[in-house]
Image (cartoon, rainbow, N blue to C red; front, side, top):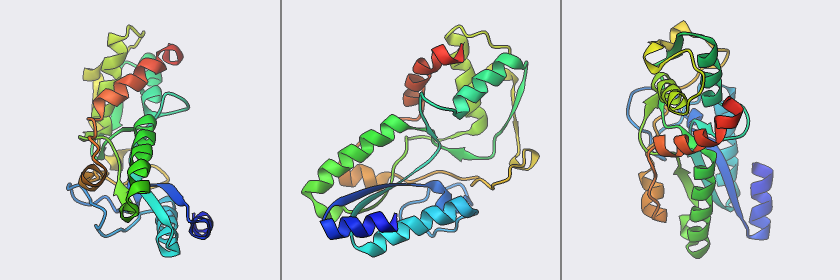
Length: 216
């Protein structure tokens, strides 16, 4: 990011960079805004934050978009994994003490394009923005949402939304620590660029509709 930023400064161009909620420590239950103190929990968050800092220090025109829980119709993702497991098992256990907003890759791309269009007219809009879908959900309720969609779509699933049990993060250890609170305050991007962020559920369902052939 630093190399690209310095080159954009030399050329007078704009750099769009995608960052993450992992730059925060995930404490508390309030959404973090762009000026909240950063405190990454792991290497991923630390290196993303270092990239942000190099971009800002370069003096180039930039849009740093921090987002969370990105999903898309292509590739591996949480929704596809839940559908696969629900087809194999009668019940699932999913973490329920990590909260965020699933954000579609298409939504994120649209936000980047809209922000860049307005920033080209008003260079003072250069800066860091939080960019994710509206609302919030735990991984457990996210899984329930996906499985409910699967049943409506007629997929051969054994598990039901009611058979998904919430568990604590401590009961499902992973090599990398995830923030418990991934809520991001997106008021700045909405006000500065005139965008309205949709609730996380609708874009997710649109992605799920395109997942159906692969899920079968």
